[in-house]
Image (cartoon, rainbow, N blue to C red; front, side):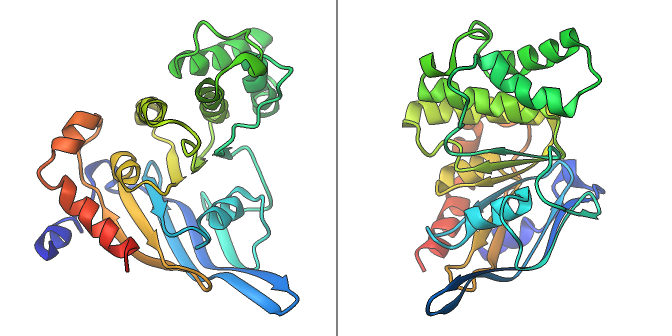
Length: 272
């Protein structure tokens, strides 16, 4: 295993020479409580290259989702800086698109209209036809080409999450943030949507950060898996580079001779 991990310190080919897109410097998150301050994250450093896909794993309550919402600008930063494309963030913005566990669609709108909300904001000068084309393109990509005009309430949970993924990619963000996006789905739908997400990402090459509890999902999706220590005072505990070639397919990944070495390494971290 040691030799394996030493070998994997080599650069991943598609990231060679790429600049940093996301840098978290000295990140600290503190919540005041009646018994004093509770420090969720402390002295956390993370750097992600342009076009890199990073998975973050760790025990429940370690602050994974807290970190993601701070990067998204939805959660106040107690200390440190989140820097996107060399600029410190100032709150939320369309340069960081988020896919949550629940897609939170507006139920009275159609799939197309739900995607259009963000497209209208990000591309205000585009013609109506151009905006329609963007929405339909990504809805087609997630397998909803025949469901543009279906109300959100009539869509299954898996279909609603497909709309959420289409909505995020349609914003053309610099960073895609995924907070347990498949956590509420059955295993079959989960696998299908992992494949859908990876297929679109492999074409778009948007910098992506995914929070997950699923070790297999983290390996399948990512170039690098970040392991967080348990809180309080959580930080980055370790990282594992996943050098499998891209584009990836599930069969090749599962049959890779070193797949279970990577899986075992991550499980060992989580079990200690």
